Image 1 (cartoon, rainbow, N blue to C red):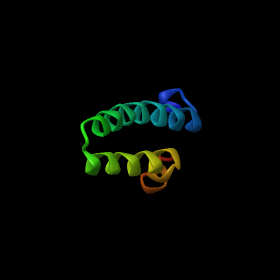
Image 2 (image 1 turned 135 degrees about the vertical axis):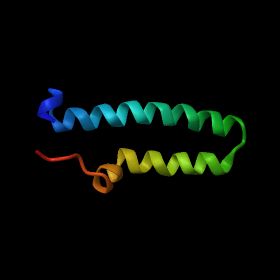
Image 3 (image 1 turned 90 degrees about the horizontal axis):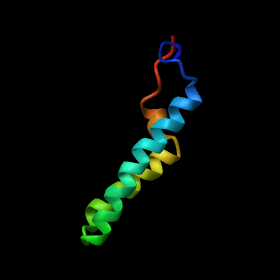
Length: 63
């Protein structure tokens, strides 16, 4: 992360904020359109993202 000029926790928070924001928008649209399957997928993805499940599955590279 030093090559990016950010600390690990800053990068994780940024990823959670940016991805979460996009997925929340998509989730809202899926709910309004009545697409329960897509809403379920997005809900699962959001829980993994906020719970740091994606970071455990795809850890950040270490120097």
